Length: 120
Image 1 (tube, rainbow, N blue to C red):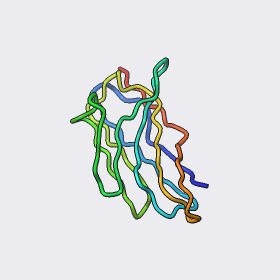
Image 2 (cartoon, rainbow, N blue to C red; image 1 turned 30 degrees about the vertical axis):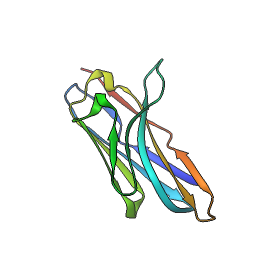
Image 3 (cartoon, one colour; image 1 turned 90 degrees about the vertical axis):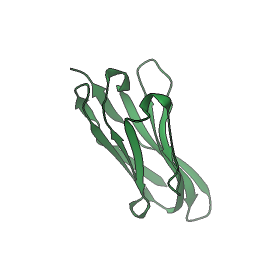
Image 4 (spheres, rainbow, N blue to C red; image 1 turned 45 degrees about the horizontal axis):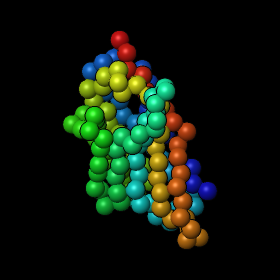
């Protein structure tokens, strides 16, 4: 009942930048936290960055100072600005959101993922 559409991935050279976007739609009453996860080949999915409805953020240590998460509550959209990318950032990036449906039931939803490849 909630769809997340993530986009913005691509191929970028080391040191480059990308901006990911994820828009939520459906029978949404409210969204609590939104976040970005990533999964590299052969590795577990990890939380990259999260943001609460109030704007509090958290980041995995490896991206601190390089990535910035933000959200537009009016558009139910979360962004991830990624700067100074390096090959270790190569992964499929997934957005995630949790909140309440209009019927009062909680939801947790995932985007389908967008590939980020950092290579020269």
